[in-house]
Length: 356
Picture 1 (tube, rainbow, N blue to C red):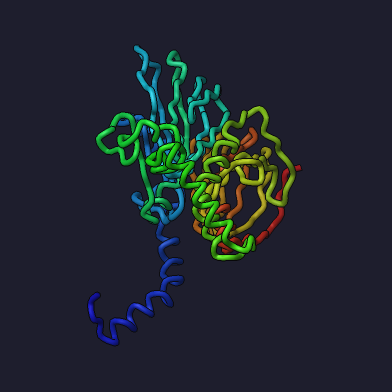
Picture 2: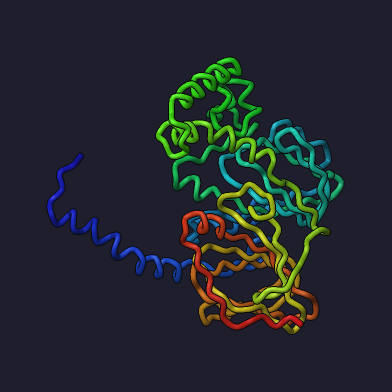
């Protein structure tokens, strides 16, 4: 390691002290509002458009938000595996209908439905090619990349596969690299592990038991991923009254989804009404599904319409107002689950919603 002078150690120590204030300034300088027309312009060049991403100047650390649009096809699109990744993904179908094969299981969907793809599950989509297909998605790539554990394997680029090219069985597991041990080796391994565990005093806090739990965690997690919910039909959303307005929780661990970072909900505001005002220590992206109005975010006014995106900075007060003639509806992705996992979650409620 390099030998540092005392002042260099002092400078490194001060970086921790200064980080919070500097982070507030980074939040203030990040984009907040993306207009629908600016998104549409980019579809002239490409069918996949990144909207919210740290590489675009946003101060997002946990997830990105993007939109995908494909015109009707003149010939069948040939797909088999699709792709998989060590990130969470929630996909909302805006237009079209079709089905997806996720971890070998078929899910039929239509506009308004949601898919929560298990981590590292191969997934491929087969839209009805007679009509336009549009979907928007939140994926936790920025978090995984920052942690150095992001793996993306795509059937179009097998030369960049990390695990799947080593063993065909790798295509059947939700554990990165989990298929590199044969079934026989895995069984023998489990027997040996149980022998080691039997030598302990059966205390759940003993080193033997603790390490055993660490080793078998991935196998247990694979079971949880396969048992977690995947499909949510838009017609089945249940809206309820809250201090923030009418909300429907879509993807949440409390609803049976195996997510550790991401949560998704839908919110609606009747014409002439407003949401509540609040702020929170987690990231949030709002996609306007319908309606028009404005939002006040840290005392600044942002007028929005269908197709716009709002990105309130972390811990900034924000409130939405519907000035149009139809119900405004938002698709809301947040990193609330990630912050709850770390114990950093904090939400403050201000003015209550008016939606009656």
